[in-house]
Image (cartoon, rainbow, N blue to C red; front, top):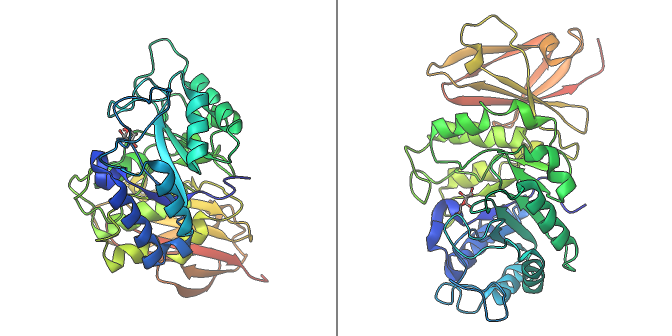
Length: 380
Ligand code: GLA
């Protein structure tokens, strides 16, 4: 299985946008190694849009912009492989990409062969400039087939923004991940829109070899880059990262790793959260009904992710403006027997919280989250 766990890596778009070039890609790859994030599992180094030259070669092949990638793509892919990393690139299902570069419509087979020849391990396929009347899912089926016939194993990432419910047809088309929404921005409203207001529909469809992709991470962007807005606080980045882990979303770092703070690297490499994200069961967390009749329960959601070892991962979110001293979760609402004792750990702090029966309450500050693991113990 090519994507038995959600793929992890780095993508150029959120920081560099159209200013991507060989130097920044190599420096991002070096930073993955230097920071230890490669060892945490972030393997794919993905060049997003605007790597292409204005035209195809006379032979009809895609080619790189010679100013940005003077050696072409193949040698760069080799360098990335030599660092123990995997190499990814971008094209579009339409005639042109979203940034108006040449794309793969009607050239799927030759482009898949070109990518395979360059040593591409991961291909993101966007959805701009599809000719009117052309069936979108069919285009992904076509590229999926072309990739299977390319002679190389390539992870296929569909970026169709969720408009035709790709979670329903993505697997059949050969996609290993599919975007669930439009583009993320570095701001609280964007995290709420993508990570919380839109989750129910597709959660049941994600799993090994076919993941719901909530879009690339904004952790560490801090208002800079290509998707800078009002920018998230540290706590808001925690909410974002924890929810992407609970949802078993692919995690593509979007910040400039050369300048990331130690705190940002620590969050991106958090072993306890990544363990939840990478769990082999591959379940996307589902929201549970609120335990209490709180007027603002919609903004205090609890998410539940069953883990392969029989434990539960729980996210208790405070999306309100007010700190809470106690947010409680009852075993019954988690689908657990009330008299069954569970050993509880605070995942983010890495602290044991003791053994509990019936319910547990934890403090959660405004725009923050508590992530717990509940391990059944012998009893009652
Ligand atoms: C679309 C995608 C983004 C990014 C840009 C590049 O907006 O959704 O993730 O790839 O195109 O132009």
